[in-house]
Length: 196
Image (cartoon, rainbow, N blue to C red; front, side, top):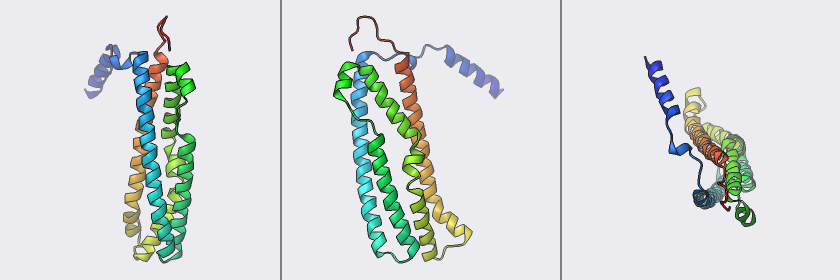
């Protein structure tokens, strides 16, 4: 019964004339391009600020905490954060006023594609570099707290790994939303006589 209901619901959605699937007018593209630029700048400022805090904290940890694993884990986290910051600067979309003036739709689409690729691959360039340091640090912490039993290790690692999983899922969702916007731009053909 539920399969039949789902089929009818999907069929109804397919037949609807949904405004969300309509091509974007040029003014809307310009507005969204400006908004995307603001969002990217704000996100990058937050990421760089968070990286600075993590670098300062783990530098202090590397100096003052006892135990080889805690020190090594701290140094690996520092290296991971530096890789993440470099990757963010390399992968993030940047405005190009000359291209924007020439072809607004193309400019906006290119920025969306760049952001979508970055978010879809966040596991490789953002989470991956941080994982070795975090696991080493958490293992050192487990040894220091004498929680080396399987349950103790699982509990100690569960929160950071759940956090990483949540970050990965949220970024995949955001990438899918950007992909939908890219598809919508691809369906749009500039009306004849409309200047970009």
